Image: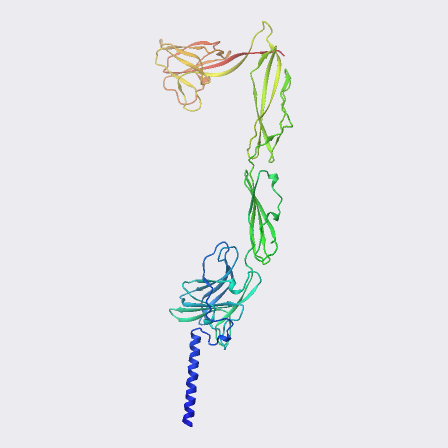
Length: 509
């Protein structure tokens, strides 16, 4: 009996050791020893996907905890963020990011739990990573993956508390292989930890920028948030509040007015939108036809007063005009002089109207009486004997080369009007006679002044504008001819003061 008893005790002890080692092996492999005690099924095929870059909405961080290796060693962080995986302007997943520091590396797997229920544990209350729903091979550092909101039952609006446990298989050249967990609260008799986060609405409302183009500053509407008409929010049944922020104005022609608004949902998420008003005036002023600029006839000597037109332009305008007086017309014993004023209206953006004109005619008795003296009008000009310009730019004054032989050159008034000739005699005993002959109709020397001025040069004249008043040889001629004898020289500047004399109708006052 004693041997049988001890044999039975031995077999029982051996069986217990087998069961104990089997349990320890199961824990080391992160596999639950009692699935009936778990709140989720072990090794569920994960719906988490390797993180892909989304656009439009930036990630919003929910939490970040230290990733501890071997309970006490800081190996990095575990960060949770809301992310928009399909760029539809709405957050739809949690991005989980493991980031290791120092010489820590991933030793293949990460195990992750997130949900409304308790973290999976065994009968002893210890966390069982092998029962976590998300088991992935870490291929980079940082390593990220997405957990869809649909896995968590989160619709994006009502706050949802969640339990989180973040496990990682880690390795260090100096510390070897270690188990890592995101910092939190322990459970059971293990140091494995979990923590809690709360999902809330982080998706900002949507609204579109608005741009309108106007032609007049007076058409710019008053500031009102009602210009933003398509504001919406993922959690709002009615419209989302829109508030005015500020306004800026820049530029002229066009002028750009930018009004900034803020759309804010019930969770405090905001979206900035702009209402841009471009005032681009491309329309010229239009004449007001109610004011008729009719032709006028006034008596001789009367004050000539033009009417002032009016134009219409929403941005204001300014008036400009030119006056043109036509040559007098003699008919029926009258000399009629007509002056036409032509108006233009130009607005602030330099848009110019068409012309608008008014003509006023002054009638005076014509003359002279029979046997009276005709009336003339004169206009003065400067004339030079044609040759080489003193300077290449600016003044057109010219000098004449002379080689002791007789020669004749043209005379020009006002640079381009041919009015006659200047003749140089041969050199006789060191003297040269210069004769001017004005042949163009109506032209003559200006009477009563030193109207002929001549300067001789022994070498090429200096290249600067000449001063005829300082020329050495001067003569007061009359009519259309003049002759003067001067010392022989190699070059001559011959300057004349001339006038054009035109007969005009006489006005009898």
